[in-house]
Length: 224
Image 1 (cartoon, rainbow, N blue to C red):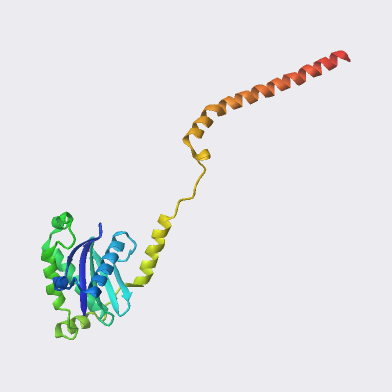
Image 2 (cartoon, rainbow, N blue to C red):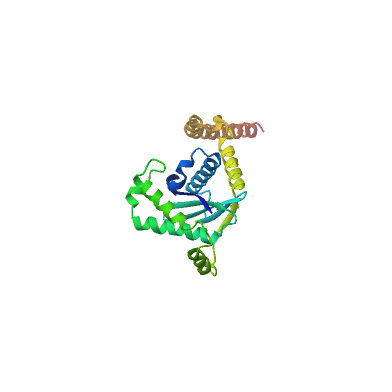
């Protein structure tokens, strides 16, 4: 059974719409947890942390499935026993319905989460068609999909969370301290200004010492 559906914008991870069937379950602790997890996955997609356009994310006895099409992410939660091919067919149907609306300009303007109410109602209508996998319509879909290869990457939600925690920890660690003496702009200016002067002084000293040696040699030779 499809238990939760969220459609979001990949560009910034903003959830645009959800199945209105579950709006009244906002006080349900389990539902809120699943919803937060779906929103987390949407953010990961927007950050390019999940690069595959089709993925199944395992979670205990449930699975998240998402499909990315034309910078829109469709996420659904189902029982682990729900046929995966049928679930992705459901997500494809949502994609087709959104294409029919042709609301690209509106989608770009939306700034408030879940404010695309019109599409939320469409999600609810399409989801009802996929509740019972044993209906003749769904059995026909499964039969038609049987020979098709499903290119879907599978990962566990805990692995994704741990990877994100590692990245956050790495970004919060203090950077390696480099000596400001050697990296300062002031030292670079001093080096540029005085290096030529130092070279000239060294050349003068070398010439002076050479002249002294030549003078000593001359004096010695005249005394012999």
